[in-house]
Image (cartoon, rainbow, N blue to C red):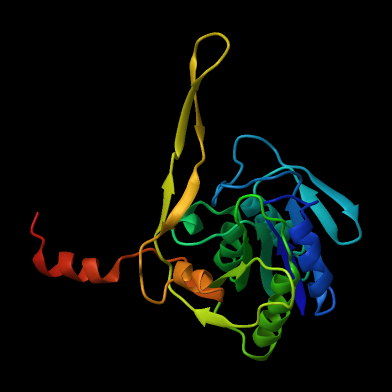
Length: 250
């Protein structure tokens, strides 16, 4: 099996290196990742300038673009003669829960694979501010997920979004199959004044919890469970489409 590994934290990210250590034992691993951090880039593509590929060592490539750029170029150029069977993204330093998924470059890398017809999964570590990351649980669970895929592949339109609680000691083994929840932030926009007296704005903020949605990703990690959420590319709201078809008259 050929595995393509990418991320949004950059080619030198400890989470990427930790995942590569596991995946290289499970198949033919090729790493294609951004040359620097690209957090929050969502599914953006670089269209207004050229992209450059640099092979930093055998089967490890960096690209001066977004996670979606990396997977796109990997499939269409670097690996075009033998496509990957699976796209894996992560391990992200920080959670991708609820609304985070829409902004996540980590999830977008796996979703780009699905757009190209290749199943994917994205791994994130649920860190709290000031915590040191421990990737052992994510490593162990990634191994389980890839072995499951080898035995029972899922459709290419399905991407598994996996969030792993951060803890020291024995790896977490308990998990829950979840739906996307709703995450809340505070102080998302910070306004300040630069030395010349002009206002500037910094987008950020801290997560302040979740809606209490039974079976959600946020609920699972709050219970110290690994959350596995199958997400899809088609954003059509089927229920409301049916309502429009029956009730709307423009």
